[in-house]
Image (cartoon, rainbow, N blue to C red; front, side, top):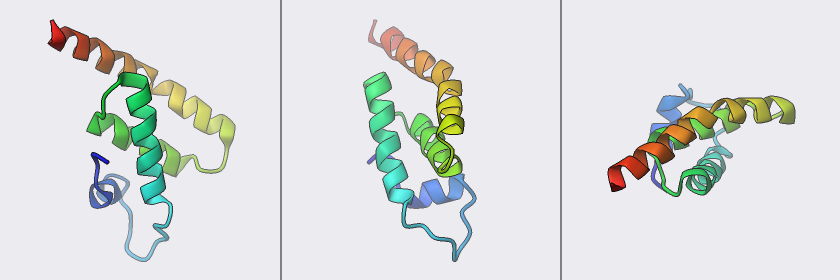
Amino acid sequence: MSVDIEKFKSHIHFEEGMDDSLLEFYLLQATSYVKNGTGEENEQLILLVASVFYQFRVSEKELESALNALTPFFVAEVYNAESDDE
């Protein structure tokens, strides 16, 4: 995993004493989601996606909308990676 749990906690302003049992799961799933979408493990995208998983952990429709809103970031990452390869 390219993003450690403490960095993720800082990113989401996680407070001491809150339940953190699913945070590693969110990071693993976000890493997989980003890697499948871009072919790479971009730390910023992983943090964004894991944050979406954390924030929208109840409503499937809201989760889908939030992930769809990240599509331009994925497109930009793939485009930039291709430009760097040339």
